[in-house]
Image 1 (spheres, rainbow, N blue to C red):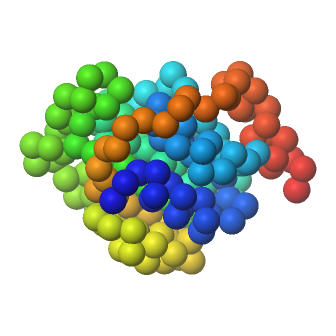
Image 2 (cartoon, rainbow, N blue to C red; image 1 turned 90 degrees about the vertical axis):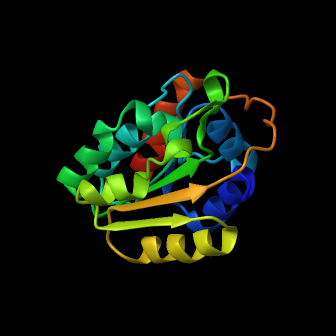
Length: 185
């Protein structure tokens, strides 16, 4: 499954829910899949995507979606334990697992050598975990996550397919746009 195809699927199902995207290709692909006010792009924040989404989730009743990466999560595994401790019912974490650190030279990540992030999440008391490898499985699990209380932790095995053009985003304006989208309701 290609990350861009999976991102387009998530955007099509997310409705008006906030989506926080990991740095680099995840952010660029979210923008290309459909820029909107409730997209939060995390340029320059490797390892912090799900932490930012967790902060949002505990600050609102609205459902929050995190599109994180395996390499970034491995750099900040404490966020998985914190999600398990806090138990935000409105948080869905989707991990794009390409089994590499794509932003630093495509070195194999721990998931390429046997680390199972869904099992890590389960061991951290996250009640709903799944690993999917195609769009049909992702759609099914993600629809369930949208309907049921979380937290949810979905590992989506993806393949790399070249990078899209860098999205024309002004990172310093992301927080203002996101905050205004919540306050305008």
